Image (cartoon, rainbow, N blue to C red):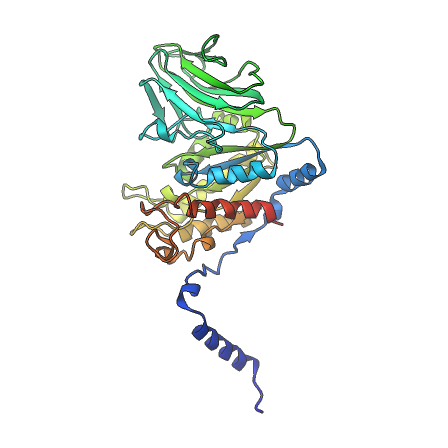
Length: 404
């Protein structure tokens, strides 16, 4: 029998696979030039926490998520990820709960990662949201009121240990808030007057039983609140800080991180791991402009550097967004994914590519709402919450749970 050379065998095998492998299988293969995960072992604090937690030590761990509307609407993926963390570890509290909302109204308030556990409601018609730029809120957002008696309410389950209120202060128009733990039977006042910008208040010890926290405008001057940080009395577990906003850009976070006041706000959250998954709005600003790869890379680089000013040993996981189904994006998400990969190598961060779990970056129609693998929303932009959102959350969870 005539011998087969290695090159001939390889050519024959490739030809056979070309025939045997149907097109729909090939369509699920994503780009091969980027690793699906890289340097997950650099999540050193997270690894240490896992070991301590498994041993039974009393340790808590704050996770943060910097994202845009993909993460802001909790039903897409942030709540699924936060719930998986809370289910695998003990729930140590809500972390940061943002009160800001996009112009569509308070029904889309940023809120907590675990929205159903810590729901936020508003009363009064005088609220105005400062969104995607408010330095006095860690999620770049907050709400202001000039109407006496306007309320923001958060329902907390039993076991709350501490609340810290993030507010806006103004020396030109000093305002006031008051808060209550007993449905308004008793109140504690807060004056927001000076200096201009952000102020934080460690609130009185809350009840040990379930209660509704009410913060109410107590002035007709411009008063502002950004949100509240919540911890519970669990000696060990995880908190999830959702620093996301609909329409947010990496550019916005990079701009705010230039302010020492904003770095102080973020530092108060005591985050030990931050997931950065943002870029969809830098890719297309919907006004004919966009960030180049170099500009976008500079924004993410700034965020990384400033997080390490706050905490030099902080864990960072770069998880660039997937390509969406907008018909004429001015720049491919592949370029932003490349930028994250380059930064991960430069700054010793972890990296996870979510894209392959959806499909090829070069063929987003494959996973479109009307495509072969229907996991995107008909709005052409977002993962569909019940399908694509769960893929997104699971990809991040797998990187945290199994990464080495």
